[in-house]
Image (cartoon, rainbow, N blue to C red; front, top):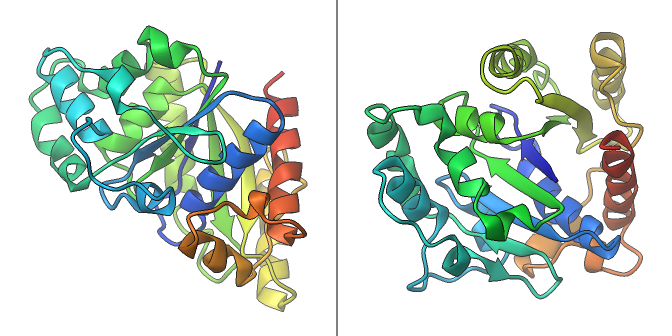
Length: 255
């Protein structure tokens, strides 16, 4: 099983778009895949067309696990029309830092949830994280086997990369020795000099992690979001074909 955190403390770099489209691409390649929205803003849940119901979200699962109460993982899983399963988030997740601070082994609460038998059956679990280096990200990294870092090919996008890689290394060296960076993904790439310069800088500093795939800046990504569809599901979509190519790289690097 591969549990992949999609992380960058900068917002607007394409984490949610990457989570949705990579999941759709993995499903197309025959992989059973679960998406986990781990951001209190719940953008991925909205992207997936989630509407509030009586079943638990990751917010309730985290609070239950943190307080040593039973938590119903099975009821939390929803199915998207494109074949990927998902667990939504809600604004209640914003309170996680408050109750986790007082919790024993607070960095391992999500790991306990993901170890439940129903989730162990998925070949891939993709975690869409909030833009922060706090306790939610630490929980995601402790629970994961891999990290994907989307980086927007625009000015200042490399700021903070060093801090993020240090957090990943800290988790690997202290709690989760199996954690590795699966890859760094340039997103919103266009034909400008700035875009080219960012990709070249990534090649210099992080070449061993850099995917061959890059994700283009195109209006079709926003259009797909509005329809609660992945670009992968849209025939002739360039972004869809790029994410299918990314799925091949992710699978190859996971071998």
